[in-house]
Length: 194
Image (cartoon, rainbow, N blue to C red; front, side, top):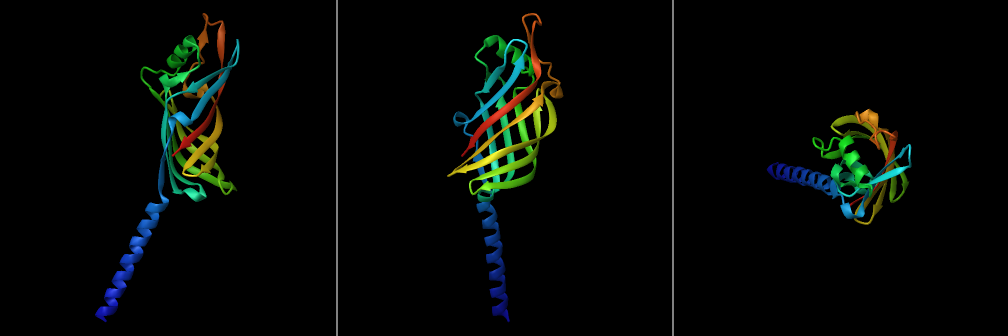
């Protein structure tokens, strides 16, 4: 009787350890690789179309199961002062519009994965909801992107159209108001995590 009790306790201990180990194995954290990632913001103006590139990004991506594309956490930050168009005057107007003095970063935090659709054994369409914070204003948005697994790394690709005024941003103006920026912008990203 005592012998059976010891075997039973050992079996429970073994299965508990196995369960904990499998949870640790499947939960994997990846870090954003800034120099291999791209993010751009594009829009229009009364003079010409424009694009600004993000040079400084950071973030983490956590999977419950990498092979199944099961994401449990996704957090990204873009340094506002790292946004560059190649035109100094435009960059200054951008930083002012984004209220850089008090809000140094643009952030996205995953709130919920709505759906994961397998497109191939290495590619998934991920439909999510998340909090986007721009110029200190937080809005919950839907964001769909493609997740591609490439060996020991993950790539997120997608784009999102938003309106500047949704984040209390006045579209920048230049040359005493003669050049006006359109309210609609498109954020495009190709972000690599390792």
